[in-house]
Image: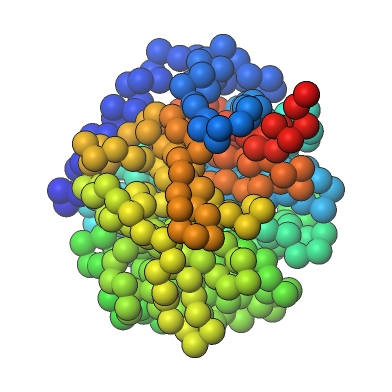
Length: 386
């Protein structure tokens, strides 16, 4: 195991010890345990901000999107599993393997305005790293709508993730919960290598993280190889930019579209505070830095002309993911920045809703299944206060 992965495991073990005594969260209103975690979250806008637990009972929540019905859809990693493969079957993942997984369990949930959760489907693969490296779970990574049709992208499938005969890709999810694969991203990456893949930290099937729907196509960002691709609904895949070619192994994770594509990066371990950034993809295909001095970026969103950046872990002494140190930073068009939310517990994604509130996947990894939650921050509440 590489030094950076050993540090990651140590931090996650610390995070799990902090919640080991807490009961598993229920699947409806917030339990006392989740309320206790939420009490550590602070807002720093200068105005009253209404903070609430919007949903609980989630299994490693990741990407969020609001559907045309106004309800929130949540991608979930799932619970992992026990199926394994070996080097005789396929190339394994160095350092954090062997993975083990389940052919089902990766889940998408729909949350209504009262915080009630309904399973849309749990038919996606779910896998986890070895027990020695924290049993970190991945499954459905993100969700997006084109019209009234829901699409999902996976990170937990593939032979290298212990699930022979599967692959990471994009699938259409029908109203009855059935899934129909439209693109095989594992095969694409095997036949279209990036320029600067990192051999010590290489995932043969990729670890896709973010997806955006735009003009009838889906755009997907993959951190481990380092690339952004465009996927047509007929399954055609085209590389938009090889991030690794100009940036090296920066682990690009967060993707947003605001006139142009914006990409934020997680970075490698040990964490170096303030060393990550947000890049804008220019019209000629170049990546131009628009914000720096960031740490472990996992989300980007825009609201009222401001860019909001989600940081999973902050603090100069935290060398690996550390619960309770996650932040949301607001960056003004002038470049001025301010931490508007602190104290998040390993957040993994965020989005603004049609109501103008910010929704954050909290306890997104490293916590037991059922402990994941979505927090709601109403930044506009002060506008309507007496």
